[in-house]
Image (cartoon, rainbow, N blue to C red; front, side, top):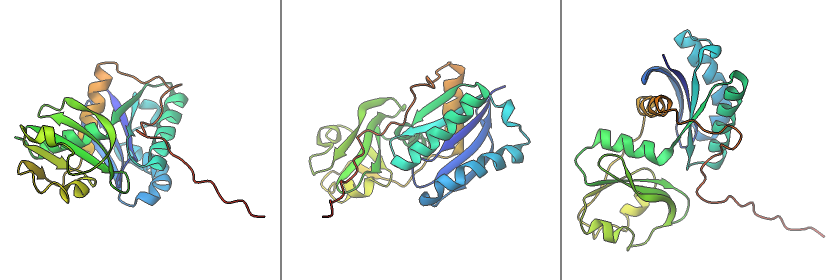
Length: 227
């Protein structure tokens, strides 16, 4: 029996859930991104109480490692690692883009490829391309969009673009008749399936070195010196 706690604070919605052998038992969702840090710890306690499970019974913790919100990723990873250290259980990590692709394939099958996009400010998105079996065929990257983006891929494929970053691409992709758009998003059931697969395959993270997958460095603006 694999009891796995889920922690996802990467995007607009935050999820804290509990699954057993890939089946979701309980879940809480927070839709206010600025409140993720305050939401996560009480949510963990409430989800475990709701399912009647002690934290000491957990066999692993799964976390979405990114890309996504810098603050959200740090909060989620720190919380997951803390529980893993305290109870000496393994850490599992999935890509946010992988989860988005999985959800899109589940909700809208039949396209040649799937391209999740996360808004990264201005004309930039975090993105990757997946085939219709969920295999990544273009590596995750921070991409500045223009009217030539995905031109080569769209010459031969019907591609479904999803995520909050896809709205930017939709505005400049009008000339591509085989670029399609849909609002899809992953849920607890997708996280449960992904984490259980990792657990069964013993694909655990190194707790000492696990860190969020930011895709690009975060830079603080230097303040002006006052005379």
